[in-house]
Length: 276
Image 1 (cartoon, rainbow, N blue to C red):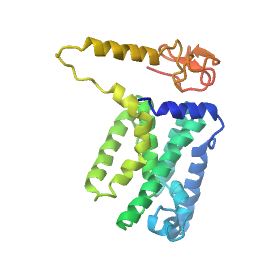
Image 2 (cartoon, helix red, strand yellow; image 1 turned 135 degrees about the horizontal axis):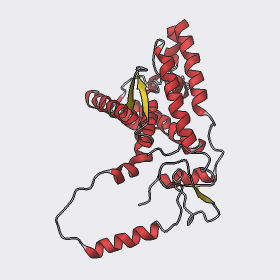
Image 3 (spheres, rainbow, N blue to C red; image 1 turned 180 degrees about the horizontal axis):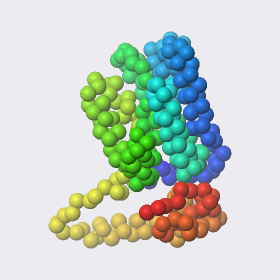
Image 4 (cartoon, rainbow, N blue to C red; image 1 turned 90 degrees about the vertical axis):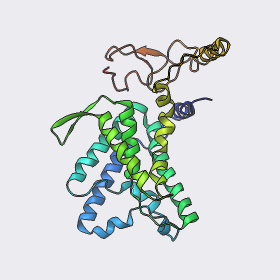
């Protein structure tokens, strides 16, 4: 079975202008604008959140406006907004505009569809903002740059992966303590993370060793199949395209990256440099 990300990458290659360029800039500006409106009149923020009951009773704008709900309150909101702007901008630079837009809006669509379906089936009423959309974006950033350091409380340097582990623990706690089926809403909201990174996480997972006899015939078939599927000389470290699938592309190696990393002509000058 092919990795579904291959289809996303091919779509992005064929539609290089798909999506909103600098998407997180617009989202962040809207966050600040609505934070100011909320500071003036807190009731205004209540018109932004995603509420399936109200959506089905005519307030259609909520399926979009909840994306712009400020991710925090008080003056801390500006720090959080900047943090997510930085993460989103880095992901867009690394992936390209089409793939980042697909990732962001797939989380939005999954949240809206599941929320409406659950409300129609159970009648349960709940209110959501974009908290889990931003969380899935943070998980993607941590998966790509696990060893990047940020200053926690502007003082303590900590690697992104440790913050991701803490967020994942709180996320799991919330899923386990929230009544069913509302507890699956955050799971669906970050499902795009598993769709994008599930294959890579499985490949990274440690394999359990076994002392049982190796089936050489089965293993030989597997190896031949992998060699057939991965018959290429060059593969881009960003988009995954190879010289076999796209013979018209040029591939080069970046001298500024740590290690031996190949990039296609579209990403040789547009990628985050490897440091390890």
